[in-house]
Image: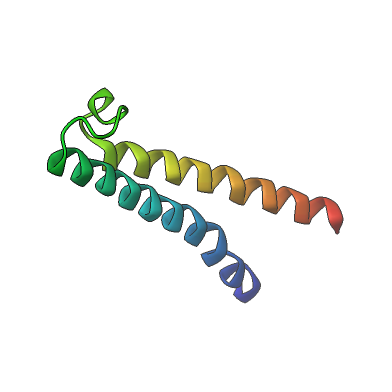
Length: 76
């Protein structure tokens, strides 16, 4: 049980960090669009950038965590 509990935080931490980074980038896009409308060509495409990028970051972190876990399983 202790070994299992030591392995859990890593795969959970990576998607959460990626989600936080995505939300931060989304917030910067929103702030830039609010301060200087039209400065970014992609800003008008989606009006809710922080949640969109946070979800994509979380999913990307999950995929990377699974890929790393699988590569560790194959290497022994």
